[in-house]
Length: 331
Image (cartoon, rainbow, N blue to C red; front, side, top):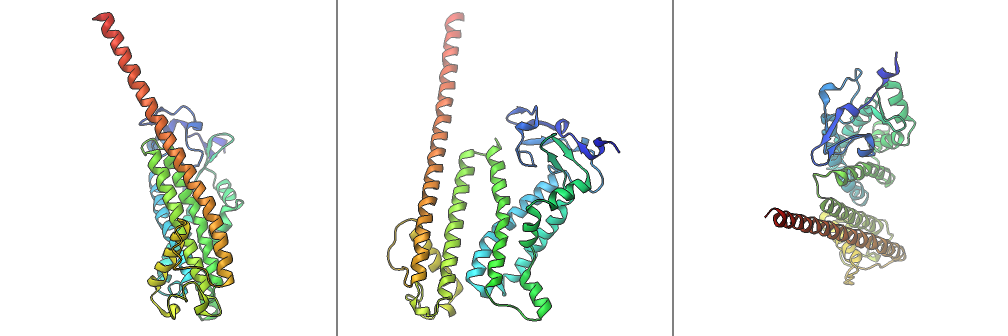
C-alpha cells in the first residue's frame, strides 16, 4: 500500500479565511491539530479511510465544543465535591457518571481521529499510527485516570460506598480536562471573527473565578478536618457548621476567598488555627502573582487596543490625504 493511503495533504482542502485572504501554507493555520474557527474546509473532496475522523470535521468540532461545556462543570464540581463530600456521593454522583461517560466516549473516538504530522504537514490516516501516537503520549493515561469513576468501582468490588477523602483528591484529576478550555481560548484568540480583547478578557475572568472557587473550597475542607470545629475560621462564626446548609457554607467560603483575593480583608472571617494561618500565607502570596498576571494582561490588552486604534486613525488620515491630493490634481 502506498504512503498516500496512510497520509493525505490537507492543503487543497483549506480554501480561504473569510477575513484574511487565502491560506497558502499550513503555517498560517493554528499550531494545534484543528485549524482556526475562521478556516473554511471543503469536506466534499476529503477522502478518508474507513473509520477515520478528520480533526477539522464539523461534527467532531461540535463534539469538542460540547466537551468544553462538560469541562466547565468538572472544574466547578471537583473542588466542590472535595469540600462537601455529601454531594459527591449524593446528588452530583449521577451527573458525574454521565459526564465521565461522555469523556470515555471521547477517549475511544481519539483512536480514530487523524492527526497532522508536523514534520511533513501531512494528515496521518493510518489506524496503527494514530493509536500508537495517542497511547505513547502522556495524554492517554491522564485521560483514563481522570475518567474512571474510582468511587463507584470501589463500591462494586466491596459492596459499600467509601466516604473517605482519598476519592475526593482522586477526583481532582478531572482538572486535567481544563487543557481543553486552554486550547479553545488559544484558537479563539487566533480567530479574526472574534474580538481578541474580549476573548482575553473572558479568559482572565475565568481564571479569577476558578482561583476563588478552588481556594474557598479547600479552605472549607481544612475546617471540616480540624479536631475542634469551633477552633476554625468558619466554626467561630457559625455553630455546628458541618450540619448547616451546604450553600450557606459555600457562600462563606467564596466570600472569604474573594475578600482575601481583593486584599479588602474586612476581618470578620480570618484564620484561627495554625494550619489555616499557613494556608492563608501561601494563598496571599499566590494572590500577589495572580494580581500581577491580571494587571499585566489587562495592560497589554489596553495597549493592544490603543495601538490598533492609532493605526486605524493613521489609515484614515492617509486616505483623506490621498483623496485631497487627487481632488486637487484633477479638480
